[in-house]
Image (cartoon, rainbow, N blue to C red; front, side, top):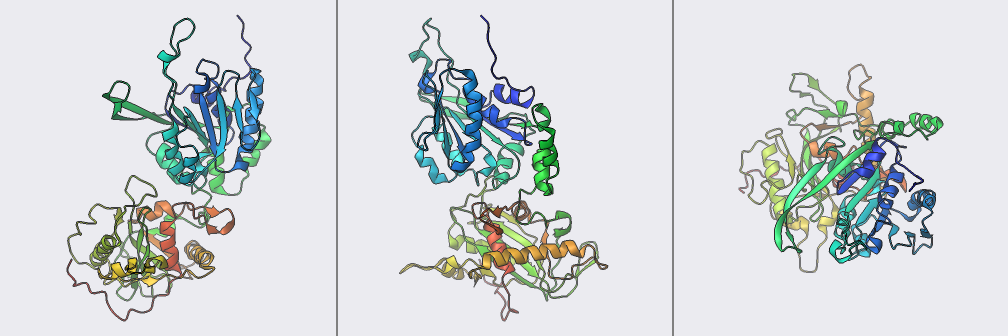
Length: 520
């Protein structure tokens, strides 16, 4: 019997993506190695093997309009097989169906609530097109509850009595680096192991079929592809990529690098070598305060700031440091998120959050007090004890002042613990103004590098190197696609809100000191 090959994978990453045995696969890299074709072929390879209606798949993008390209590619590929497959093109259908019963759906979704449109359905194959478009992992992870099948080989023997293998359950996603979801995708697939290295997670699971506890191993891998593997690409296309002006976008799309800031609002101004500095003792005449963005199911953000007044500070190496009056330095952070999670809150009460804030105030001012039991080990806290003389109240989200008929507000509950705030500036236009002012402060540091003194001439922004969480989250914030002067609010922006509140805040010279003598 002779066979006519109508499509075959390219050698290299595309072939590896089709043969990979893992449960969860990310095919990532530069533009152009054939990632979308591999995703479509990954589903098609099971069609006609005997699973029939049990082999059912869905490929997601974040918006309906974004599905147009992958649908077009599927038509080019699947019609080559001439196996009777039909595409149902109405907006309510958008699916391929085969005479043998298999079907592949194209759908859109990005919010966790979008999962409920699929709750209870069976999809042995789930795909995500350009995974970094997903703002966070909520929808992605929720869809794992649909990655299942009721197919049992013994119930559907072949005509010769032999049994099919168990139906594969797999999630296959494609992406380039860059985009609003860059950070969470990188943390899930890129950071744990080198590309091509399978990450295994074994756990004991009650097996409903055997009614026994059994070890089950889940596997995850990132497969890296490059345009250099694709002989069908026009070199004019490659030249276009290489001439992209944005250096981060060029590095992501041409090199497939994940070590970029992802299309950000501030990445053109951010230079870690200039903005990140080693901690030093804050002069007593500088203002030290804090900002707050509330969160319970989502992270809260507490940030501690020093604002300069023109007085010189002494750096750890003995050099003098004197940025212009009004410059800001982030000196400490406490972020309400488990260390190994993204955008997940601690569900801490406002009372306990206030206890932690009060303790940090005291520690920054040099008091050696035991950390409250309620906050010990909670969230991501990075501070340098004894670095300043005192801390005064700073700006907080005005939402903490809202209250019910007979209920204390969050601000009132915190004040009962000795933690006061000042209501943040959230007037119309404050989001854009805050982003613009922050950008100016970043730019002042960059421009200061070229001055004779090496110091900025305008109020500037710095961050202590101990504030690792803020440094990992703020530079990668992407622009709002509807307003490029703002930050996209779908991403993990709690630190940004706290930063924006402080940038827009004009602290008075403190008329009182926070009472550090109060016992815990």
